[in-house]
Image 1 (spheres, rainbow, N blue to C red):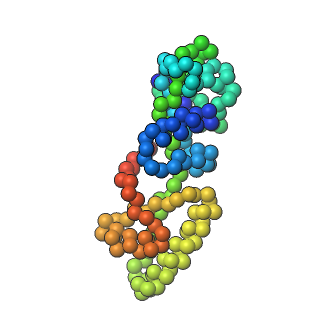
Image 2 (cartoon, rainbow, N blue to C red):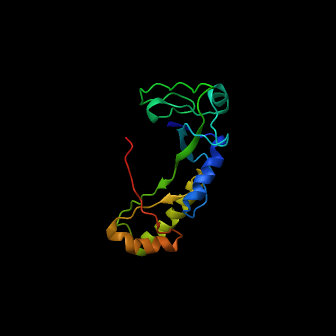
Image 3 (cartoon, rainbow, N blue to C red):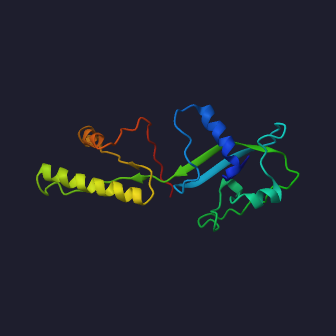
Length: 184
C-alpha cells in the first residue's frame, strides 16, 4: 500500500471507481482550485497485463507534482509539512512491482454559513428584509471568491420554520447525512 498525491495520470482510475460506486452524482472537476487535498491509495503487487500501472522511479518523480510520505501522510506541493515529523518516503525503484490506484480521498472547500442577528432590532418584517439584502450580498461575495456552494447547519429549534424560508431562497435540505470531524 502506498499513499500519495493525485496526479492527472490517475483520472481514469478515479472515473472507473466513481462509476462503479453508482451514487448518482457527477465526478467533480478535480482541476478546480477548490480541491485542496487529493490523495490516492495504491495497491502494490498488482498484475494486470500492463494496464493501470503506476509510474515508478524517476519517471514518476518528473511527471508528478505529488510526493509520498512514510506513514501515509503527504507533504504539500511547495513546502514540507509543518506539523509532521514523518520523513519523505524513498521513491520506488524502477524495478518495483506494478501497482494501481484503488481508493482516493478528495477534499474540496465549501463554506459553512452562520447568521448572527440582534433579535430586538426592528420588526420581524424589517429583520427579514435586512436578511434578504445580506443574503444576496453574501451569495455574490461567495461567488466572487470562487466558492461552489455553501452549507447552513440549523439549530433543531428553528430548522423547520427557518428551513422553509431558506428553501424559498433556493437552499435545499441535503439528503445526505452530514458527519463532522475536528482535524486539529
